[in-house]
Image 1 (spheres, rainbow, N blue to C red):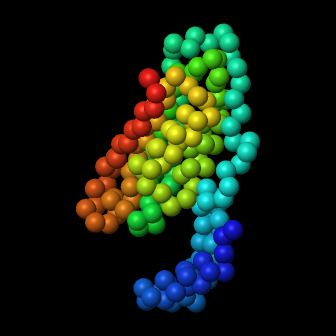
Image 2 (cartoon, rainbow, N blue to C red; image 1 turned 90 degrees about the vertical axis):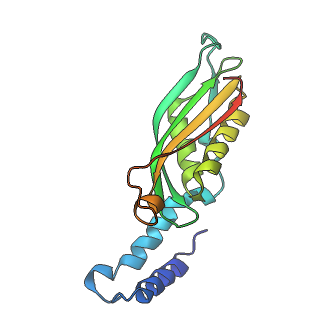
Image 3 (cartoon, rainbow, N blue to C red; image 1 turned 180 degrees about the vertical axis):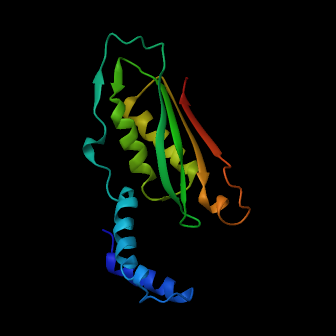
Length: 172
């Protein structure tokens, strides 16, 4: 469970620490907004919903061909700097025994695993391992391409630089 009161207090402390006037009109509701945002963007810290994956059999599908889902939105928070990284995921798999997954489930799975402080490398692996365990495919490949705000707005300031990670399990 997210402790919104602790978050509000922490936000007030940060604003004071950087020299802001916490009574300024534009900041009065900021602690509440940040606490609400944290509840939303860190929902992946909660238990994985049982109904996130519903597979079905498609006996007419040729299991020598791959299914590829592109441009799945990825939005996560870098665990090192608590800044966002944003990009897309591509998931490709070869079904075994006609077991396939509804297309909307891929977005839900990516969203769940990315909704916590995260590293892109671990996120890629978590998605691949989860899907591999649920689908039991011949093979699966998960690729993430993301821009990290911790690189774009601080440090080296490499605006537009994209980090690519890829995990392959099985034969694909």
